Image 1 (tube, one colour):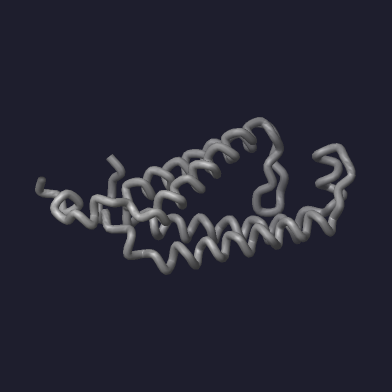
Image 2 (tube, rainbow, N blue to C red; image 1 turned 90 degrees about the vertical axis):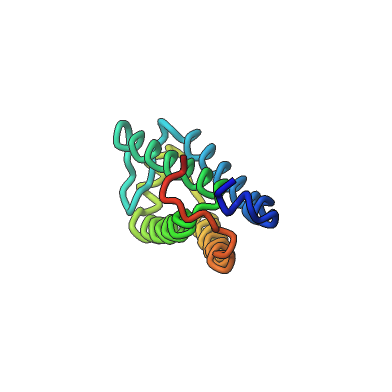
Length: 150
């Protein structure tokens, strides 16, 4: 019982916020993994086939790492969460401004409502910003200073 997590009874209990964040990033992992085989918009380009599969695999592994890091309350995960969320915002904004509605319609094969697409992307950006603010303000929950998950 040398580890400080076992010595301090307060540290044994995982805060509800961390558990809920872990569930959210587990959900992100499942949604990302389920999109395998689909075209993926990434930094203004729509990828198909093997490059899209590689992007999905990398994003899935990253989401899985974030989930595990949240469950372990790893300090490094706090930084990675903020970086991942910032990158997701950058990727969403870039895709929104660079990929034309015509290119998107050609890729998915049906007509899209650009105003609905714009509204949903803005909603996602706001949600990720709010999530990032929540994570930023709860840094004190990330008490595990280990560099390794296992």
